[in-house]
Image: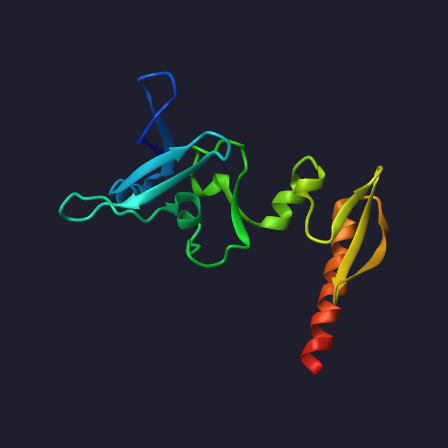
Length: 167
């Protein structure tokens, strides 16, 4: 027995006459079915929605559906993103969604210099942690993984933040 409902979006699959279909939990169906649902599937692959007013006009404001399902206000908490456990961005059931930080998202991807967290740089097969203090770059160490390097950066950042609070 399915515990979800499939909803047809307003976005056509490129090169076909078919529309994208999303999966949502049955208990979310009532409020989600009242929205205009769209899919952005070029590079970023996400589902967003717009409110439909009583006069049948559609709002110009867009919001991420996965974040809304997880209870995150789309105008706040930009440090958090929704991760799809099974990798299917059209599967918006609550048991498939997980709220993670942007840093966790970056660390979970295959790493290249553009996807490394703040304060971490690649140096051969190792990762350098550094922090900028008054336009001077301070070296924090060389690490085996980007996660370790980022932890060193966060430790230095928090220490610096505490020092400025004391003044």
